[in-house]
Length: 301
Image 1: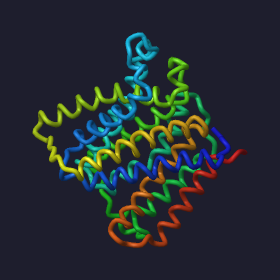
Image 2: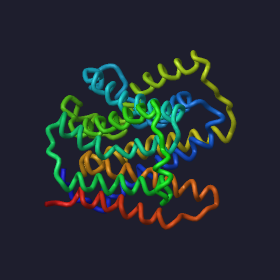
Image 3: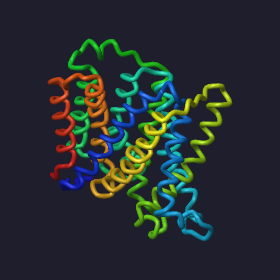
Image 4: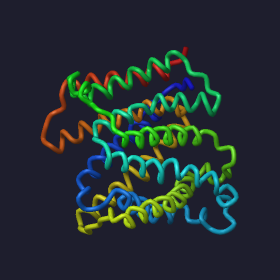
Protein backbone atom coordinates (compact mmCIF):
# COMPACT_ATOMS: atom_id res chain seq x y z
CA UNK A 1 0.00 0.00 0.00
CA UNK A 2 2.97 2.35 0.47
CA UNK A 3 4.85 1.84 -2.78
CA UNK A 4 7.85 3.94 -3.70
CA UNK A 5 7.04 5.76 -6.94
CA UNK A 6 9.82 5.51 -9.51
CA UNK A 7 9.90 7.92 -12.49
CA UNK A 8 8.76 5.13 -14.84
CA UNK A 9 5.81 4.27 -12.58
CA UNK A 10 4.81 7.93 -12.38
CA UNK A 11 4.99 8.12 -16.18
CA UNK A 12 2.76 5.06 -16.58
CA UNK A 13 0.15 6.30 -14.13
CA UNK A 14 0.19 9.83 -15.60
CA UNK A 15 -0.12 8.66 -19.20
CA UNK A 16 -3.46 6.94 -18.54
CA UNK A 17 -5.39 10.00 -17.25
CA UNK A 18 -3.84 12.14 -19.98
CA UNK A 19 -5.13 9.77 -22.65
CA UNK A 20 -8.50 9.42 -20.89
CA UNK A 21 -8.75 13.21 -20.89
CA UNK A 22 -8.14 13.16 -24.64
CA UNK A 23 -10.87 10.55 -24.90
CA UNK A 24 -13.30 12.90 -23.12
CA UNK A 25 -12.49 15.80 -25.43
CA UNK A 26 -12.77 13.71 -28.59
CA UNK A 27 -15.91 12.03 -27.26
CA UNK A 28 -17.59 15.39 -26.88
CA UNK A 29 -16.57 16.39 -30.40
CA UNK A 30 -18.14 13.31 -32.00
CA UNK A 31 -21.23 13.16 -29.76
CA UNK A 32 -23.52 14.49 -32.52
CA UNK A 33 -22.31 11.72 -34.85
CA UNK A 34 -22.59 8.59 -32.74
CA UNK A 35 -24.55 7.50 -29.67
CA UNK A 36 -22.61 6.62 -26.49
CA UNK A 37 -23.02 2.84 -26.39
CA UNK A 38 -22.36 2.53 -30.11
CA UNK A 39 -19.21 4.63 -29.72
CA UNK A 40 -17.96 2.36 -26.96
CA UNK A 41 -18.67 -0.78 -29.02
CA UNK A 42 -16.89 0.58 -32.09
CA UNK A 43 -13.95 1.75 -29.99
CA UNK A 44 -13.28 -1.64 -28.47
CA UNK A 45 -14.00 -3.51 -31.71
CA UNK A 46 -11.16 -1.58 -33.36
CA UNK A 47 -8.94 -2.23 -30.35
CA UNK A 48 -9.62 -5.97 -30.63
CA UNK A 49 -8.68 -6.00 -34.33
CA UNK A 50 -5.43 -4.15 -33.56
CA UNK A 51 -4.51 -6.59 -30.79
CA UNK A 52 -5.28 -9.79 -32.69
CA UNK A 53 -1.89 -9.98 -34.48
CA UNK A 54 -0.16 -9.84 -31.08
CA UNK A 55 -2.31 -12.19 -29.01
CA UNK A 56 -4.77 -14.13 -31.20
CA UNK A 57 -3.78 -17.54 -29.69
CA UNK A 58 -5.36 -16.54 -26.35
CA UNK A 59 -8.81 -16.79 -27.97
CA UNK A 60 -8.29 -20.24 -29.50
CA UNK A 61 -9.93 -23.36 -28.16
CA UNK A 62 -7.63 -24.99 -25.63
CA UNK A 63 -6.21 -21.67 -24.45
CA UNK A 64 -5.79 -21.15 -20.72
CA UNK A 65 -8.34 -18.35 -20.99
CA UNK A 66 -11.41 -20.58 -21.09
CA UNK A 67 -11.04 -22.36 -17.72
CA UNK A 68 -10.84 -18.85 -16.19
CA UNK A 69 -13.52 -17.21 -18.33
CA UNK A 70 -15.77 -16.20 -15.39
CA UNK A 71 -13.00 -14.03 -13.93
CA UNK A 72 -12.31 -12.34 -17.28
CA UNK A 73 -16.02 -11.80 -17.80
CA UNK A 74 -16.19 -9.99 -14.45
CA UNK A 75 -13.06 -7.92 -15.23
CA UNK A 76 -14.59 -6.93 -18.56
CA UNK A 77 -17.94 -6.04 -17.02
CA UNK A 78 -16.34 -3.84 -14.38
CA UNK A 79 -14.14 -1.96 -16.86
CA UNK A 80 -14.67 -2.18 -20.61
CA UNK A 81 -18.38 -2.94 -20.53
CA UNK A 82 -19.90 -1.75 -17.28
CA UNK A 83 -17.73 1.22 -16.33
CA UNK A 84 -18.01 2.90 -19.72
CA UNK A 85 -21.73 2.15 -19.97
CA UNK A 86 -22.38 3.70 -16.56
CA UNK A 87 -20.19 6.70 -17.42
CA UNK A 88 -22.08 7.37 -20.64
CA UNK A 89 -25.42 6.89 -18.91
CA UNK A 90 -24.45 9.39 -16.25
CA UNK A 91 -23.49 11.92 -18.92
CA UNK A 92 -26.89 11.46 -20.54
CA UNK A 93 -28.81 12.03 -17.31
CA UNK A 94 -26.59 14.46 -15.40
CA UNK A 95 -24.35 17.44 -16.00
CA UNK A 96 -20.62 17.15 -16.75
CA UNK A 97 -19.69 19.00 -13.55
CA UNK A 98 -21.84 16.65 -11.46
CA UNK A 99 -20.37 13.58 -13.15
CA UNK A 100 -16.79 14.73 -12.57
CA UNK A 101 -17.54 15.72 -9.00
CA UNK A 102 -18.89 12.25 -8.25
CA UNK A 103 -16.00 10.68 -10.18
CA UNK A 104 -13.59 12.46 -7.85
CA UNK A 105 -14.63 9.91 -5.23
CA UNK A 106 -12.44 7.27 -6.93
CA UNK A 107 -9.55 7.42 -4.40
CA UNK A 108 -12.03 6.96 -1.55
CA UNK A 109 -13.61 3.98 -3.32
CA UNK A 110 -10.13 2.52 -3.82
CA UNK A 111 -9.42 2.70 -0.10
CA UNK A 112 -12.84 1.35 0.90
CA UNK A 113 -12.77 -1.55 -1.56
CA UNK A 114 -9.31 -2.51 -0.40
CA UNK A 115 -10.42 -2.48 3.22
CA UNK A 116 -13.79 -4.21 2.80
CA UNK A 117 -12.97 -6.92 0.28
CA UNK A 118 -9.20 -7.37 0.32
CA UNK A 119 -8.28 -6.83 3.97
CA UNK A 120 -6.03 -3.80 3.36
CA UNK A 121 -5.56 -1.44 6.29
CA UNK A 122 -6.10 2.25 5.57
CA UNK A 123 -3.61 4.70 7.07
CA UNK A 124 -4.13 8.29 8.11
CA UNK A 125 -1.76 9.41 5.36
CA UNK A 126 -3.94 7.77 2.75
CA UNK A 127 -7.06 9.53 4.02
CA UNK A 128 -5.14 12.83 4.01
CA UNK A 129 -3.95 12.11 0.46
CA UNK A 130 -7.53 11.43 -0.62
CA UNK A 131 -8.65 14.76 0.87
CA UNK A 132 -5.89 16.70 -0.92
CA UNK A 133 -6.57 14.96 -4.23
CA UNK A 134 -10.33 15.57 -4.13
CA UNK A 135 -9.71 19.19 -3.12
CA UNK A 136 -7.65 19.63 -6.29
CA UNK A 137 -10.47 18.24 -8.42
CA UNK A 138 -13.01 20.53 -6.74
CA UNK A 139 -10.76 23.50 -7.42
CA UNK A 140 -10.67 22.68 -11.15
CA UNK A 141 -14.42 22.13 -11.37
CA UNK A 142 -15.28 25.31 -9.47
CA UNK A 143 -12.81 27.30 -11.59
CA UNK A 144 -11.59 28.74 -8.30
CA UNK A 145 -15.05 30.09 -7.39
CA UNK A 146 -16.89 28.68 -4.38
CA UNK A 147 -20.27 29.80 -5.77
CA UNK A 148 -20.01 27.24 -8.58
CA UNK A 149 -19.87 24.38 -6.08
CA UNK A 150 -22.62 25.86 -3.92
CA UNK A 151 -25.00 25.77 -6.88
CA UNK A 152 -24.34 22.12 -7.77
CA UNK A 153 -27.46 19.96 -7.42
CA UNK A 154 -27.16 16.18 -7.48
CA UNK A 155 -29.72 14.26 -9.53
CA UNK A 156 -30.63 10.55 -9.62
CA UNK A 157 -28.38 10.07 -12.65
CA UNK A 158 -25.34 10.76 -10.48
CA UNK A 159 -25.89 7.31 -8.97
CA UNK A 160 -24.59 5.86 -12.24
CA UNK A 161 -21.25 7.60 -11.75
CA UNK A 162 -21.03 6.42 -8.15
CA UNK A 163 -21.50 2.86 -9.36
CA UNK A 164 -18.96 3.43 -12.14
CA UNK A 165 -16.35 4.68 -9.65
CA UNK A 166 -16.99 1.72 -7.35
CA UNK A 167 -16.74 -0.70 -10.29
CA UNK A 168 -13.42 0.79 -11.39
CA UNK A 169 -12.04 0.58 -7.86
CA UNK A 170 -12.96 -3.10 -7.52
CA UNK A 171 -11.54 -3.78 -11.00
CA UNK A 172 -8.24 -2.17 -9.95
CA UNK A 173 -7.98 -4.40 -6.88
CA UNK A 174 -8.75 -7.48 -8.98
CA UNK A 175 -5.79 -6.61 -11.20
CA UNK A 176 -3.38 -7.19 -8.32
CA UNK A 177 -5.12 -10.32 -7.06
CA UNK A 178 -4.72 -12.73 -10.02
CA UNK A 179 -5.73 -15.79 -8.01
CA UNK A 180 -7.18 -17.74 -10.93
CA UNK A 181 -5.50 -16.29 -14.01
CA UNK A 182 -3.13 -18.51 -16.05
CA UNK A 183 0.44 -17.19 -15.56
CA UNK A 184 1.08 -17.24 -19.31
CA UNK A 185 -1.80 -14.85 -19.95
CA UNK A 186 -0.99 -12.66 -16.98
CA UNK A 187 2.62 -12.16 -18.08
CA UNK A 188 1.62 -11.19 -21.64
CA UNK A 189 -0.01 -7.76 -21.51
CA UNK A 190 -1.51 -8.06 -24.99
CA UNK A 191 -3.08 -11.46 -24.23
CA UNK A 192 -4.36 -10.25 -20.86
CA UNK A 193 -5.96 -7.15 -22.42
CA UNK A 194 -7.33 -9.03 -25.43
CA UNK A 195 -9.03 -11.52 -23.13
CA UNK A 196 -10.76 -8.65 -21.34
CA UNK A 197 -11.73 -6.95 -24.60
CA UNK A 198 -13.26 -10.14 -25.98
CA UNK A 199 -15.65 -10.41 -23.04
CA UNK A 200 -16.05 -6.64 -22.86
CA UNK A 201 -17.38 -6.60 -26.41
CA UNK A 202 -20.09 -9.05 -25.39
CA UNK A 203 -21.23 -6.69 -22.64
CA UNK A 204 -20.90 -3.68 -24.95
CA UNK A 205 -22.92 -5.39 -27.67
CA UNK A 206 -25.72 -6.09 -25.19
CA UNK A 207 -25.77 -2.43 -24.07
CA UNK A 208 -25.64 -1.20 -27.68
CA UNK A 209 -28.51 -3.51 -28.65
CA UNK A 210 -30.57 -2.05 -25.82
CA UNK A 211 -29.67 1.46 -26.97
CA UNK A 212 -30.88 0.86 -30.52
CA UNK A 213 -33.96 -1.08 -29.41
CA UNK A 214 -35.03 1.97 -27.40
CA UNK A 215 -34.57 4.22 -30.43
CA UNK A 216 -31.57 6.01 -28.95
CA UNK A 217 -28.92 4.76 -31.37
CA UNK A 218 -27.32 6.94 -34.02
CA UNK A 219 -24.32 6.62 -36.36
CA UNK A 220 -23.27 9.17 -38.97
CA UNK A 221 -20.16 7.78 -40.64
CA UNK A 222 -17.51 10.23 -41.82
CA UNK A 223 -13.73 10.49 -42.12
CA UNK A 224 -13.67 12.67 -39.03
CA UNK A 225 -15.47 10.03 -37.01
CA UNK A 226 -13.17 7.32 -38.38
CA UNK A 227 -10.08 9.24 -37.26
CA UNK A 228 -11.64 9.88 -33.85
CA UNK A 229 -12.43 6.18 -33.44
CA UNK A 230 -8.86 5.24 -34.38
CA UNK A 231 -7.48 7.63 -31.77
CA UNK A 232 -9.69 6.50 -28.90
CA UNK A 233 -9.06 2.84 -29.79
CA UNK A 234 -5.27 3.19 -29.86
CA UNK A 235 -4.66 5.80 -27.17
CA UNK A 236 -7.34 5.79 -24.44
CA UNK A 237 -8.12 2.10 -24.97
CA UNK A 238 -4.94 0.13 -25.73
CA UNK A 239 -2.16 2.39 -24.46
CA UNK A 240 -4.03 3.76 -21.44
CA UNK A 241 -5.26 0.36 -20.24
CA UNK A 242 -1.79 -1.13 -20.75
CA UNK A 243 -0.14 1.73 -18.83
CA UNK A 244 -2.71 1.65 -16.03
CA UNK A 245 -2.43 -2.11 -15.56
CA UNK A 246 1.36 -1.90 -15.38
CA UNK A 247 1.19 1.07 -13.01
CA UNK A 248 -1.25 -0.69 -10.68
CA UNK A 249 1.01 -3.74 -10.60
CA UNK A 250 3.91 -1.54 -9.45
CA UNK A 251 2.28 0.99 -7.12
CA UNK A 252 -0.91 -0.75 -6.02
CA UNK A 253 -4.54 0.24 -6.59
CA UNK A 254 -4.74 2.74 -3.72
CA UNK A 255 -1.93 4.93 -5.07
CA UNK A 256 -3.07 4.48 -8.68
CA UNK A 257 -6.51 5.77 -7.71
CA UNK A 258 -5.06 9.17 -6.89
CA UNK A 259 -3.56 9.47 -10.37
CA UNK A 260 -7.04 8.95 -11.85
CA UNK A 261 -7.97 12.34 -10.40
CA UNK A 262 -5.53 13.94 -12.84
CA UNK A 263 -8.10 13.20 -15.56
CA UNK A 264 -10.42 16.18 -14.91
CA UNK A 265 -7.39 18.47 -14.64
CA UNK A 266 -6.00 17.27 -17.97
CA UNK A 267 -9.49 17.48 -19.47
CA UNK A 268 -9.82 21.10 -18.39
CA UNK A 269 -6.40 21.98 -19.82
CA UNK A 270 -7.03 20.19 -23.13
CA UNK A 271 -10.48 21.74 -23.45
CA UNK A 272 -8.99 25.15 -22.82
CA UNK A 273 -6.33 24.51 -25.45
CA UNK A 274 -8.93 23.51 -28.04
CA UNK A 275 -10.92 26.64 -27.24
CA UNK A 276 -7.84 28.83 -27.55
CA UNK A 277 -7.78 29.79 -23.88
CA UNK A 278 -4.78 29.76 -21.59
CA UNK A 279 -4.77 27.70 -18.37
CA UNK A 280 -5.52 29.69 -15.20
CA UNK A 281 -3.77 29.93 -11.86
CA UNK A 282 -6.27 27.55 -10.25
CA UNK A 283 -5.14 24.83 -12.67
CA UNK A 284 -1.62 25.07 -11.23
CA UNK A 285 -2.94 25.08 -7.67
CA UNK A 286 -5.15 22.07 -8.38
CA UNK A 287 -2.21 20.22 -9.89
CA UNK A 288 -0.18 20.82 -6.72
CA UNK A 289 -3.03 19.56 -4.53
CA UNK A 290 -3.53 16.38 -6.57
CA UNK A 291 0.19 15.67 -6.75
CA UNK A 292 0.43 16.42 -3.03
CA UNK A 293 -2.27 13.84 -2.40
CA UNK A 294 -0.36 11.28 -4.46
CA UNK A 295 2.88 12.01 -2.63
CA UNK A 296 1.33 11.83 0.84
CA UNK A 297 -0.49 8.58 0.06
CA UNK A 298 2.55 6.92 -1.48
CA UNK A 299 5.07 8.06 1.14
CA UNK A 300 6.36 5.50 3.61
CA UNK A 301 5.86 5.91 7.33
